[in-house]
Length: 163
Image 1: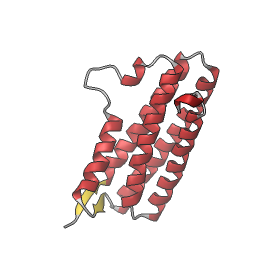
Image 2: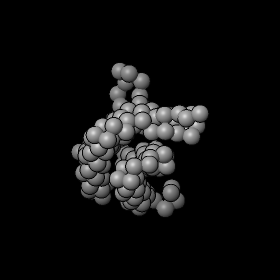
Image 3: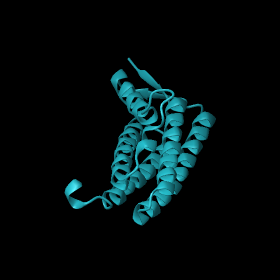
Image 4: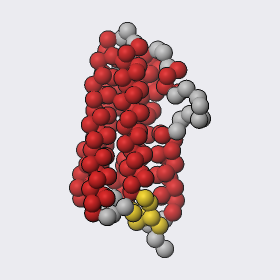
């Protein structure tokens, strides 16, 4: 029996994840006095905008090709991907301040960013695994590589004993 994942829904989640990443990076960069964190977060914010654009293009292409459903081998695979997207998208209860706005020190901000980048990689790798379209796969691979480079650059900001 085949199960399907709504490609439009999941790409909209990816777009929102990238928007939130940009918001976090810009917001913390504007509040910190740590020059290294400020510089890296400014750069990462720009890269999140680039990823958002890439996902929007994938969404347009998906709609144009009328490939709005991704066929999965089992239902659990789809539930896993939806769960990952939900965790990344909804870390707060309605009406609460966004969790990342409560972060005030650079090391906590870097750790939070690392967690979000790692979760993004997990989601995008899962989507890569179930996507058959060659152009979409290429985009996922590129974004995954860039997200992994974010992890490397963020890790370099942490003291050695805390990595």
